[in-house]
Image (cartoon, rainbow, N blue to C red):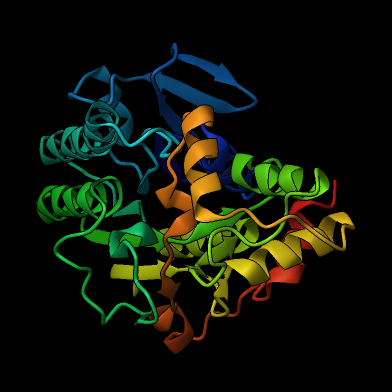
Length: 308
């Protein structure tokens, strides 16, 4: 009998790939979306507003797992209004899910919450594994948003699913991913040199590993609490850009100084802190539990991501 897995906010990049994996192994997939309720390619879509309980909560009754991917993309200008929207899109969705779970007779066995390594803000040279507490303060659009997000999950999951897993994810690298495509585009245009000093650490994860760990969190009863889903081989920005150049066949790339990043991101409606800050993530719990990464090194991950 197929197990039902509900993906909240599952109509985005990661949700589409996760739905494919779940369907391929025979699971029933229900996606909570801000779009219309329908069915496509064997996946059922239920409309929700991401803010309050509604008729969509029926899909959670007796489901095996809930995976929450909801949240506005972070690639926006860090204005107060935008940052407030980033926080609300995450916190409101978590609270709505928690309220829905609390009212069920048979809630899902597990709630997997996808979060971010950006909770560490500018981590400097600190090796951030799960034993390292995130800083109380930092960039509002990073530390502030992520801290409120995790606090909401802690409160909501306490009375929700029997098992709660929070995945702090590094930058995902995969085929068709907008961030990966943007890096490749810069390199092909000859602008694939270091960004800023080039010394900021990048915690990254191959899409295949991110999906694999998420499925593991759904399936493995022993998984609970916080996990860092990031490659055991973080790199500095200069090394990342060099690897991107190798992947697209460019030997050289023009470096972009910090002031150039500030100007460029303002013109593009993005946030300069995204490429200029970094953190040195480490997946301590996954390694301790014997997880074997599919693409632990950057060249392999980029080769798979840009193969098309």
